[in-house]
Image (cartoon, rainbow, N blue to C red; front, top):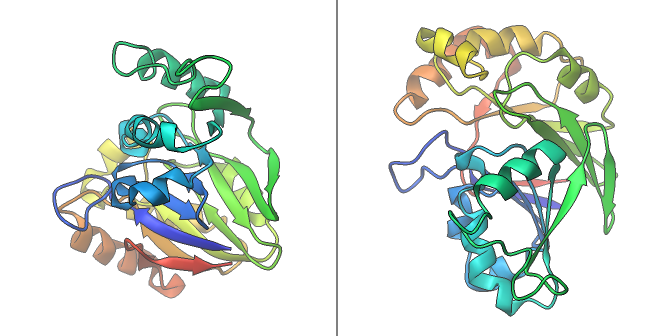
Amino acid sequence: MKVRILGCSGGIGGRNLRTTSLLVDHDILIDAGTGVGELSLAELAQIDHVFLTHSHLDHVACLPLMVDSVGDMRNRPLTLHATAETLEIIQTHVFNWAIWPDFSEIPNAQKPFLRYQTLSQGQDLHLDGRHITVLPANHSVPAVGYALGSGKATLAFTGDTTTCDELWRAVNNLPDLRYLIVEAAFSNREKKLAMMSKHLCPSMLAEELLKLEGRPEIFITHIKPGQMELTMQEIEECLGNLKPRVLQNNHVFDL
């Protein structure tokens, strides 16, 4: 099982700044931010499942374009997995014929390009030997994280979240946790904004990681453009003993 990082930035503005998306093997996406645009048509056509953490644009921007681009190249619908609240937002505000066509009705309702599958927090799914667990999260809209397991190792991805005791209880119960991808969207000087928007800054992240019982390799995602050096410097000051690393595009995790 391989997890490739397509995008991990909190914004755009340069060749290496792509928003959140993770490619699992060749057929699963976790979120569909602008990083999805790095894939070829042939690669896009192989994706059968998209799991959304939440509905914000930086995590869904490429989803409508992807369905439109390769829907007629596939012989079955793309399955969009998300909580009921997130699916309602996506259907109401994206696939609504005003912003974008409703591909759950195209070319017809019997054989659509897109189908919806509701998830719930704590749910476990198995897809061809791969284990996906829906983790709690605490964000400004309904949100979740995901744990990806191969049976040999597990990667936990928090998605966008602020402080969340339930998240860490779930993470601590994961088997063979090898990697943790966790956000730090703002620097400490913008802590008030981080709290208002329900993200984390380095000082808040340090407090959250006190709840982590294991010692997985830690990777930091979702840093705002222009704040990379400052945020990572603050993380080093707060969390140096945990040796966190900044997540990079095209990093591949083997599970």
